[in-house]
Length: 364
Image (cartoon, rainbow, N blue to C red):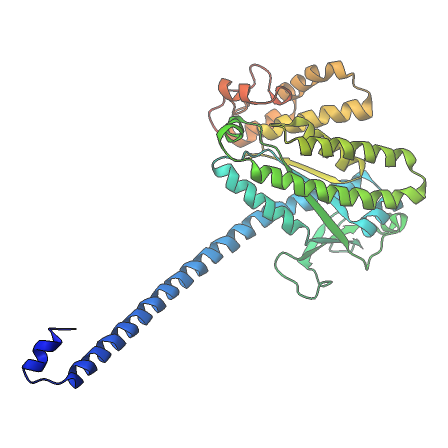
């Protein structure tokens, strides 16, 4: 109100005009407040739309990186089980197990990468495969990607990947050309570098624990289906191996031990025992990944080719010094040395350390 009402009366004014002025001012203030509220809501809506566009773009990017890895692993699995009707029946009845392994830390930018990775692996479960006979326009092991028409509401992430095989292979496999093979994707994560040391000490490892707990439950469900599938076929030894490896994996996950290499190894071997696909990755796919891949290769030599356990470190060093991992590093950064320094080497678990003379590159 402007002025004093008592003074207004003494000057001969009545309450009517002042009350009307009060009402007008109140209405104006209410309208102005509503307008400001609308502007604020509109601004928040615009920001939310921009943020949603960014999220969709990020989702598209990580999905586009995940899909080729998934398809490549699936084709490799088919080639590892040529003309195998039992394996084909497993794929149709319980799905294709795809094991993604992350070596990202839960610190800094890699924490956000790990979040994106988790979403990409979740989206992998919406992909299906079909096996079809080769045609004049589709060579053996070529692919065709399109929408999954078997679901009521197809989306950009619900895709059907058709893999073309020779007709005689499909007959031998007893493939069901009209049926789809569903993907059963899991993600295990174990940070192993110096940034994970920091996260383990003063940071947060809840994201990693949550990812591994979820993956363990999914592995338990798939292993249960797998045992139900093979038990009637009299594969008692395989069933016992699955039980043993699942018990090892459960212990590795539930202990929440820092930089637990056993978690990586047990989940890898369980996946392979059930005919699943495998992928290992870190930030660049050449340093920590090289260490993990060579360790897995040595474990396979021990299990499948009677490599003496005492020779493990020697074979690891040879692979990391002279194997294709060095070529992979060179193709990425024009330097054969892994991008570790002396401090970073000390932070790595012993089994994931490269030999002397193979590291020191400044590029990542």
